Length: 424
Ligand SMILES: *Cc1c(COP(=O)(O)O)cnc(C)c1O
Image (spheres, rainbow, N blue to C red):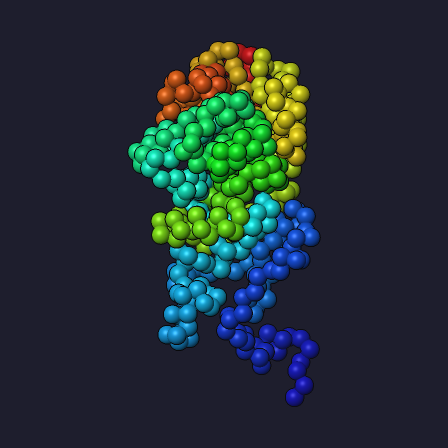
């Protein structure tokens, strides 16, 4: 009987089985193809691998282990003689797709995804530093990075010196014979200090140091530190990469050699790697990374332009009034998504402004599609000493504004009314 053209017959299961083959083939992408793609394309398609099902959206492989066809196959994989996965602390197909995509976006040979940004920062430093080694770090770092440098690394006999990262000579003076790494953030959190990556990298390389850059504030759409001499780029992917305030994640990108010989020698056995589910969430987010980051940067420039005319002092790398504006525009494709506001009325006025907001959320996260505002001195940088906050330019009247994807005029209207409520 000929198949009916419609009706109930069309709903009958087809003769061919729904699951035609086991998922055996899992092919990655050829670098000779992806090397031709531009960032917006890489953000959507970079690193995608498809199973025999030909799924368009990346699959989530929620598995901790892998089964082998034979004992010999298992042994060969452990010896590294045959390709294939052995355990999800070491490899996972979904996480690997994310890692390949981040590496391609960063222009790096290799990347590894981590559970959080702090896992990325701590692993990127601990994997290469030993007791007796010396680290030079920019003094304006994300709060937990500062705790890592000031309090945690010294517990393991790693000496640290912090410098004003904008002062190139200070990096040169801080070098010692045992200096193994430089660590910095540009633009910095939350003071938006911009440092000269190329000059600092050259100084570090002269001393044989590895240059590690925390690029969470910029994302690879705004800044690719390896193009300016960085050896290792570390991310909080919680921020712009997920960008929708859903998961914590991080990443470390570098050369293949450093990844294998230095990072993985540490990370394979300490286990900071990202779960496949969270990797999948970030993979989905990266599809819109280029769109989101561009739009947020455009919004930020509009809001910063308004704030500049409305309050005594604000900082945004995309404004000509930023002290390192020229350098910022040399290293960065856009001004970024973060603005710092400085109010003369101290903590009281800063808190009053936050409490007057109707649209913008009071939140210490950043890089979200929602615009978020925080008072660093009482939140993100609460755990660093008042003296260190002072050095970092974190005053009691400072607020950090992370611009999202809302209509910029609504953001401006909300800030305007909240400023009035705070007496400005
Ligand atoms: C948020 C952040 C981190 C830490 O990332 P988590 O994902 O919260 O662990 C590190 N550096 C910078 C610049 C950040 O903004």
